[in-house]
Image (spheres, rainbow, N blue to C red):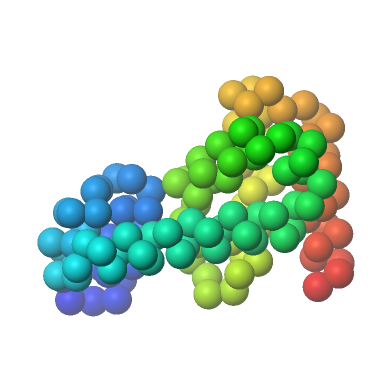
Length: 123
């Protein structure tokens, strides 16, 4: 493993669960514990970004559904930007794809759209 692109690709594969941390550790020649700390940091980063940008949706859905959505979103969309809020940008599209699996209504999806647009206008 030599280049930055290969490193990023390997870390993203690990974050999405495509390879386990042991395999990532071997490929990156990095301690597994260090990768675990990084993965936990990134997972919290994404959840924080979601909760910062979508403030009404989590309490409406409840902790069980919200946490499951946030975890699934993280697995499918590991962040690629250093900017915290960019990690939440694709969440609306993710909700569209997962609406039936989570019992989301048009109201939930419209609320997510409103909350994102509100954040964009505010920022």
